[in-house]
Amino acid sequence: MSFKVRQEIATCGGKLLKLSHFSELIGLSMDVNVYLPKQYYSKDYEKVIPTVYYLSGLTCSPDNASEKAFWQFQADKYGFGMVFPDTSPRGDSVPDDPEKSWDFGIAASFYVNATKKPYDKHYMMYDYIHKELPVLLDEHFSESSTKKLDFLDNVGITGHSMGGYGALTGFLKNYDANRYKSCSAFAPIVNPSSVPWGQKAFKGYLSDDENDWDKYDPCKLIKRITNTRNDMILIHQGTKDPFLKDNLKTDLLTEASKNTSWEGKIDIRYADGYDHSYFFVSTFVPDHARFHAKNLGLI
Ligand SMILES: N[C@@H](CCC(=O)N[C@@H](CS)C(=O)NCC(=O)O)C(=O)O
Image (cartoon, rainbow, N blue to C red; front, side, top):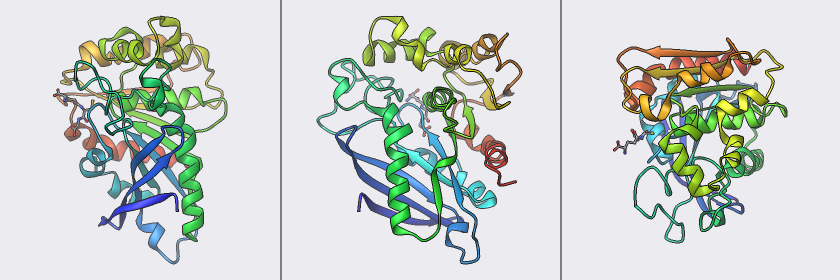
């Protein structure tokens, strides 16, 4: 069995599983939380259950969103599962930020495949999130359950802050393969190449050459990737978010989308008076859940 169940918690109408598994790509054990909605436990429910991946922000483990975003109520309402991956590799062998700051290193992987030493050994988070983890979850739950959960095809992706950037990047980079059917974000870093958090991450994990950064930058990706399926992306951003001015800069995405196939397709909703916390995220989770449920064919 590839996944170890550390904890199984009854919550809302379903169960939150706190899992650990070995990742070949990362070379270490990784934690991931999975919420199985009430439909999973219902004898009469016959539909395949799609999943939504939620990528968390700086300093988070899979537990922050599991405890404070209240996705579970929404997952039960529409009948989708949730996957909450970790934000980086962890452990004594994992190199951290030399300055011990919270915006780089452990819990701050920026969901890239690092190419620079010493981070290239374990920080393979892009391939882990978008390739290895979904396949492992699919294999595990196909073996261990008769109920069909879909971790690979009819899936959506969302995230908060660094995770919002990770969701946008993963959605866009895999757009031509139609990997994700739905994408949304809460207070995402939209143009990492131009802001301190992103520049520090890209210099540390990738290189000093800014050309290497473009492939992970949503503002650059929307210029290269054509919106062939008339997709919308939903974004919420609090106006009192202390990181908005220097690191999130949401307006840059609207700017970058001008004269591209994404112009008018990125629905950015500014939420007056909201900050960056889970009080903000949880307030707008119902809107995002509905958006994903629609795109995943549940309503
Ligand atoms: N640790 C930082 C804040 C970092 C932060 O706000 N992280 C966000 C994601 S970017 C988060 O979700 N934090 C964990 C939480 O609120 O549970 C500080 O002290 O200012």
